[in-house]
Length: 224
Image (cartoon, rainbow, N blue to C red; front, side, top):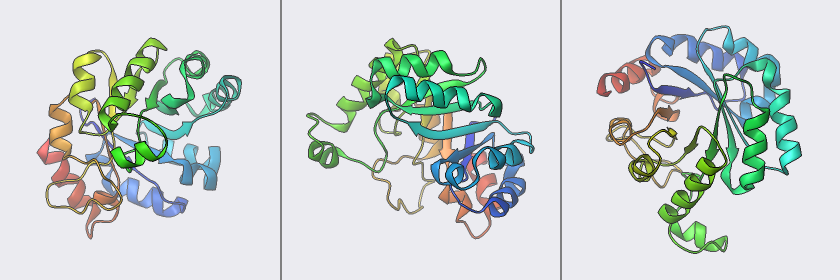
């Protein structure tokens, strides 16, 4: 991939998503469609954006019993996504079945810990140890399950890359230097994440909410 940036189109309006994607498509490498978009527009919306010719990342974060997740993966075969997410906390059997049911050209990556969570949040859910510990545990489990890679924050990507050299590592929650972090708690810059081993950089609000999204996308691309 020449440009590792996937633009997060986490908006419910299809026309607005298409307009934004068209505006910046020369400066991103793919489009990430999340749960909000998929629930609003389903297969039709994905097909509409796929017509732009960029790889599609379906960030559905599937998490259910293995048979249900496998069925969901089969249901999106026709969309031919480049990347699909499942939750690593769903367990090894679920991840194995998700990968087995995925399309031939679809990478299945496991979400380890949401970038909106930190050590305190983890403790409140009854999980011992730090966010870093949890990410490393789940990354190891995802590798054993045969997945292509994981989703983690920029704070953990270097350690995961060292542990899993061939892993396809997706890093969201990125913020260019000087930008607001919003509801993200474990953030780094796109350049830092890339230098530390990230395969894909997911960037949303720093582009979509910028006064000039095209200029913002160009500026981020220039740092890489």
